[in-house]
Image (tube, rainbow, N blue to C red; front, side):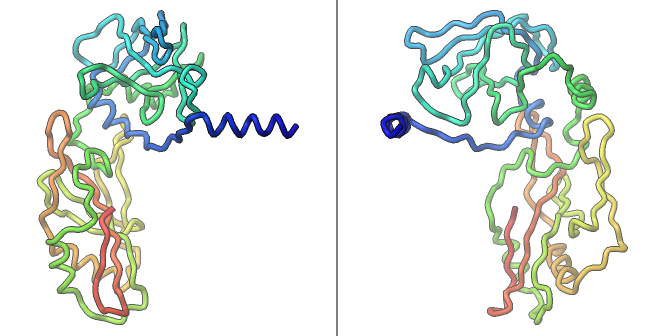
Length: 276
């Protein structure tokens, strides 16, 4: 028994190990930025001489995006762990006769690629896609990105500070707040203009019936705000100009939410914030 455990430990230490950690992109982002979105069946799978990669070919029976519609597309994928001697929680493979829904884009060197992870691509079982998702795909070409309000989609600025916000908060009231922390949702239009700032409980989202994307908000004025929240909103509304975010392919400006966490430091009597 000890020998078996010793061999297992040696194997684990001698084999490279990697973990998988990423976020699946929102449908609107991946659909609009993909070169092709299709359903297809795998008709060919051939390994390279060193077995470290393999080439698969899809016979495509349904395209979802407008444009050219090839009948077949091929991809070079990394081989399974048993060939590479690499243990990874991200290990996945594509096999003959499997049916897939694929979102594919070009790599930096111009080759088409796709992945099961960090993507909406998926192996299709015998059951059809659920009706809401199927309706989304069938109408994807009708989607106009500037009709909706986004959260982290198409985000270009990941900084956690902003000098113009700093100057606004320097003029904030100095008080002994009982509650000194809040999170605000800032609605910024496609021109980069701040339209509203509210706590999450105040916001009633309005959604599109096909894509399930947010088109507007209503404000619940019955929600009671603390003194600190009122002062924080008053401060933030003084900064009207924000980043303009654009769709990465069409370059169309879009409306979006910016989350802002605000705190009043009681010890140093100063306002602090963090962009999320």
